Length: 344
Ligand code: ATP
Ligand code: MG
Ligand code: FE
Image (tube, rainbow, N blue to C red; front, side, top):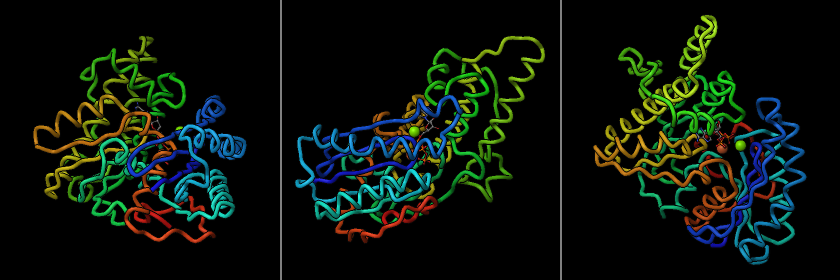
């Protein structure tokens, strides 16, 4: 099927078009520069930017794919989770286009779309698979028995998301927002073994109740204390070493728990999605350690890891192919849509 996907859950206005598993267009307008001076995404600013960008981005995607709205078989849109006002812009636009062009519309889960986008790169996802979802607002381990609706959470962060930890640590190192890509870059010149930062929820006493859960707020505090101690002593902060050592701690826990889930459940496919999946160390470490256990790692190219419309189109395409019924035209924008609701 030819499916158009609309994404407006945060600060990216994305429109993607796919045919089956083939990516035809991936148009994005970002308001990230407007948020940078506030050190985080400002919801009102994001909503307004989506309103301005949605129609031009839609037109850009259609032109890029060389199709018209009449050619499209279905429109998919992020129904949640995300910023309420931002989601509303995409959902309202999807309804408008669907009504005008008489197309079915699918309201989909943004987090499931972060997992589904990998099908554009590597084809159908073997089921069952274990999914590690690591983004700006979420960090979860999932068992995926059916990407069209059978998703079971195994664990999640009990405090900060992985991307949030990257952004907060970048901020205290004086790096720009969003900090994940900056930490990634700085870390390349640093020594990952320079500082032994804590690995949250990996001690024997924590594993009983939190085997597949994550915690990054203690790590963030440990980095802050370490940096402050340096500054108080009047010594320079070795930014590259701190970045590399912090990144190593995050990746070590993410990869360790994800591979544990694979081995315990006897599942040999690990798919990684979400903005943090763009991290070069996470990708390399996952590949390297998984290979030792005969586990295949699937991670889409970095540009598809962060928010985009193609991921929404990819999930929509999979839902259409799986025979899932479209959403009602009064589908909601749900800022707290649960991970288990793949489509509304
Ligand atoms: P969610 O998907 O939970 O709603 P979001 O949509 O805001 O959150 P994404 O766009 O999926 O988040 O991911 C953004 C996050 O990914 C940011 O925290 C950013 O710092 C992080 N990120 C992006 N690139 C990298 C990288 N190379 N290394 C580490 N983190 C990264
Ligand atoms: Mg973003
Ligand atoms: Fe996201």
